[in-house]
Length: 430
Image (tube, rainbow, N blue to C red; front, side, top):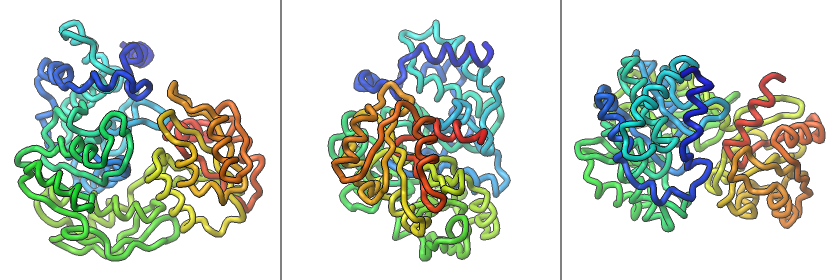
């Protein structure tokens, strides 16, 4: 199949990202295991660093990839969702798969579908395609991000040499909740016997759930790794990182937000655990300097300043608001472009984004069948005392906000990765 045929075939399958209703019935790994068995278990052809967590997975995956590359390894990276193109989900050394390679990877799964007892899901297909492609391209290591939870996630057919947990917060409570302990239990499913666990969550009651999964060794934030300094710098941050093995001062990271220092510490601890020892300081500096994180406090325009951030839950929204205050607090005023999916409380999300301090909220629906109506988001903004305008699409919202904002103001596009991806695609030619 060519790319159009392959993505058309993929779209015919149940996509739990677009419609989570069947998710409860999808707590099974047998389909993706069967596909991979037919392929000769490619997920066992290379070591895996497996990441889960409520927020920060994608950023941490990019940082770990960059550090591994700086050590001279060929690195496969599997992340989700994508911002603009599906190819982004399956990458080698930071570069998305080509159209031809992506189509070939999907075709390899399509050829096996007639031999399965039931149709695989959209995410199961992409996961199998990623594992197959990484084996075909002979990567030295794969950095694999969980799609949702961990225990029943399709990526959990791999046995990660290193299991990484960024944090635990309330999100997707309808499927892996409802409590923080329930969510932690699901995420702890990626910890396998003999694996190293890098644990970014510091709540002791939750940390105990991960330790009970019986990893071979555990590295915990604030005990075995973390940062000593995490300072705002021109274009990003300067970090003084440490692990139980070594201190790494003066590390520049081209990413905004103090929380990215937390993600950097987790990524560094994960790569140290993978190698079983400290990294050369110069390689850490080299790797972190090369990190680029699209859609995470990404500056895409000036006069007015335009920033994209994919915060999609209250914890992420609070972190984004704090990062904007720190990095861009001198702006004259703020205009928020906000869209979110169903299942989010617009009042809670907007309060977390500090929308009450904004001059205007422009509400729009994400390009998703789960989109929350823009009118509901606008009404929630007005209830906080902020003027609001509801429009019909992300491009309309971005154009409206940029036209309305003054040169000294900030336009922040946020609320959903779908919104950020659509905005990024719309602004790219400009």
